[in-house]
Length: 496
Image (cartoon, rainbow, N blue to C red):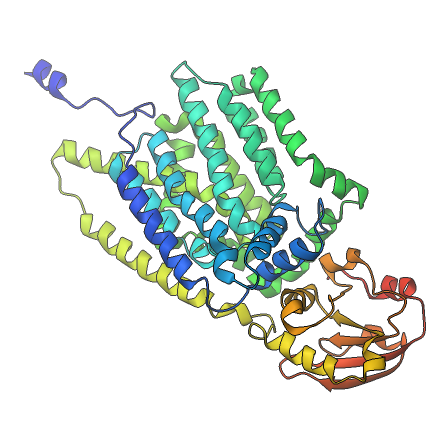
């Protein structure tokens, strides 16, 4: 009798099992996700980081910038060139790239041995993540990098699964190098991901990866693709490193300090994603079937701790959530399979309730994304350019010819540049952050139309300062410059 039971018992499912890929349901989720974000794209105006990408990509194309690599600005500039002043067209690449994350989450679950239900759960968790729901239609670096991190993790997981089965395809490592290099041109934090993965690989294995010639090919390809932005940073004194101090100083205000950032890192995963991420980390670190991928779970935990200690932004680790969610979904699948073998009933109503709540929460965040574009003291779309244009045109013609427009912050300067053609404004200048290296106005500009709060740092360099307009944001006329622009610029430039 015991022999019969042993013979008919279900065999254990291993990480090497390959269920069918749930392309139909995942594609449906991705299409709905994309349609929702495209539908809201024409509304609410530009997000502050998005308008910055647009302005510098269109008017200041370069191989790098003080605060980021060039790919996102160049993409935004290209879309603006195709369809000027169309937020819908501008945001199409961001929506399509973000929607691909749904399929990548499913692929990660598939590689880890997840069945169709587990794959769909992972895809839905990604689609309803609160951070993803907020930014998926904004063309910003942190929008584009999430699917790229997920693609890198999928290539790594696939190689590790094949290696555990004794048939690894090392060409996956070359593809990984391409993805890492491209991601470096989007946001440099992928370097922290690589360092965490390498360190954890040395501790947990499989160390055989380091002995593969293709691994070093991977590193070489990544460096070659990332070379333009690395060379630009080196030539300009590595300003990206100085930005870490700026981020640290802003964390208490933007994230509530380290405790707030630690909490937000989890909550940003969403109603479904947060428990799946937590469970996924535990499974990756402890489950025997996930031993080949243990270093990936450890790397996620290392980055979580690192960015809390370094006072980083809570969204710096969002790209890791895909693999964690997938591991969590497979972990719950194993529990479901164990209950089925034991003949006990599951709690499907909990999963359905969580799914509905996740969709509702994500929908609320998508709706909110149309309202937060006026955050951080930035007025509604076009209102700033309209006010500044009125003040600029009110100047006497002789004065206007020798007047430059300057934004107090890079955000205000970018908002003005985004609508400069529409409102007949000259391109704006600013000594703040990424706009500083673009240089001061020409020497012929004796006066400045300053847009922002009290222009205290500028008063010492001009004979007269007086308010000339503005509603949401004050506009000042600074007359009679008393020093060369090079000297003035040294005093007013700042990353903070």
